[in-house]
Length: 247
Ligand SMILES: [Zn+2]
Image (cartoon, rainbow, N blue to C red; front, side, top):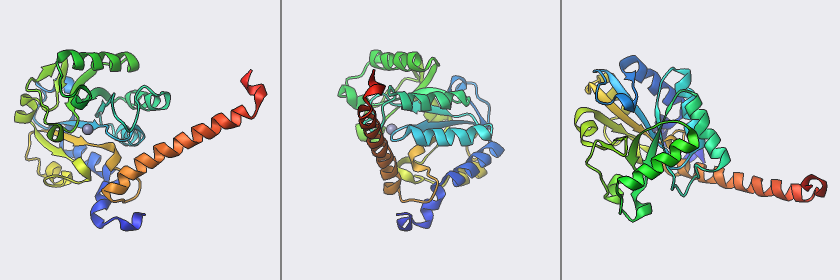
């Protein structure tokens, strides 16, 4: 249903994404959350919160790697849209890390009915680090506005808080939340370079091969996963019909 997409939606294709990464590279240096305090003027923290799709994240990670850009991928453990412990999804995260990108935690306080202490964050960090054998450098809260949960410390359980006071105060911020740019389009922000240090948040599911409306982009992720589940079931049935293969 690409016909339902408007011209605005053509800002959220893989091609448009490549152009943004190239633009960012021309104006900023991509830095690690490990260096958030000491990063020089002209640094960008390029962050992805993975809400709907690790497959889309892999697509963006490849584009970034080809451009020599380093990003940080914030992975959820309680997403209803993907399971980071599932073999195919974990393989996707491993590919992202293998491309030179960094790992972080996208934390959903709602899983704990908002009764969250350092211990809950530390436990999720340990699980992710064990699963992917990589350091988890930072965390971001999932739907902070909707959930009304915040943590006012810069570092919690050894992870940099993406919404902590230091980053909020010392870094400009641009986000594609809900499938559009909340303030100015990112391209404008990058070219104007009005922020010496910048944190950019993108959600990989908003970036697709062809223009789609925001709702279609989410449906694409949901339908892709559903189709994969059907294939899995059919593969099992096919194997069951070949008894010799079960021995
Ligand atoms: Zn989120």
